[in-house]
Image 1 (cartoon, one colour):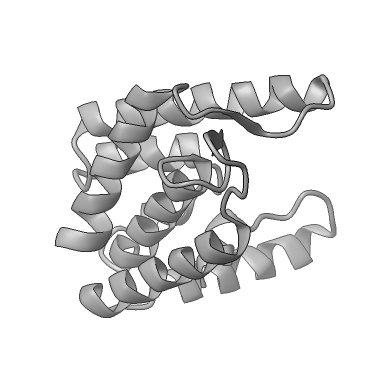
Image 2: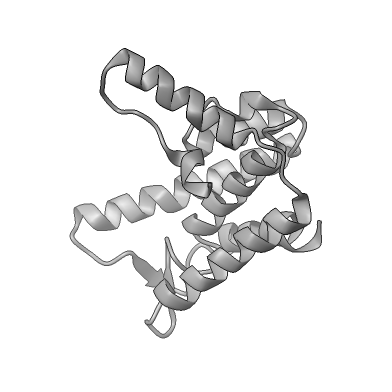
Length: 163
């Protein structure tokens, strides 16, 4: 159900859109056992990392490597699925920035952490877009974005390992 967190209708019949939104909300607000969900999300990310992780020595893949964009996405998806049963407002948006805002507004994540993850996400995303516009691959020197990566790793540990 992780994909539903990001799913949205871009264009379509209003009735179909309303039906999709209702089904999405219904599935996302199902009660979930925290430890089980935590394990499932973590294992899915580990599979992706093993399959898609950076194959370039001394390089950081902005999207796929540990501490990158995908880790932030998985954190937000986990938290929405974990807490949407208690706080259905978490299902309103599908983008990471607004989800992080909602997590802070609903007292699930400290505002400081949400703001820091938002900054890390937008910084990494902007660099990825900048590289794409130059038709360059989405990896940089492993020395880049160390503060952002450390922050994302700490948040990952907090939400998907320790809890």
